[in-house]
Image 1 (tube, rainbow, N blue to C red):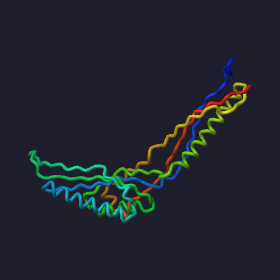
Image 2 (cartoon, rainbow, N blue to C red):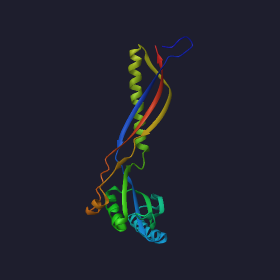
Image 3 (tube, rainbow, N blue to C red):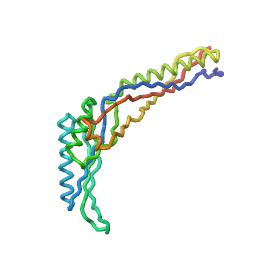
Image 4 (cartoon, rainbow, N blue to C red):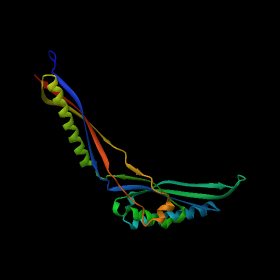
Length: 212
């Protein structure tokens, strides 16, 4: 209840969560190449990386969805601590928008780069989360209103107009799939891809006035 000169209010926190189906995945694909000289190692790495990029581009992956995330060139050493060669490595982050063909595309890329390829950290996501976020916020507002009505009745009052709303959204982490080793992946017809589901949640802090 309010005091003289102060309107009575009630503050509640509402939560809402909705689930959607991922429609894209991001995968890290790397190559490494060893050779007697630094230039030969880098040349070999470049050739294999170019094969990877060609496979992804031919599968419809846009240039904006291909990103080099790491490039290294370092010496290798023998048991005596002497330099006996060089190793170059390259890491690509690839976003694939067609989950129906993603497994075959990853498999084709692995074959294109040969034994020097590595595949890791497949994560699934939703390209446009705005509709889900809107649904989550609406659910959070309904939850807040339900709580406020219950508390108002318990206090012997009626719920009045809404005074303020503060909102925050929380997206649950992407689903990460750590698949079989690359040798097992090559043995399969195509890499199995199961996207599962992903949740988006929202929270609102709502202040209502109380009447009576």
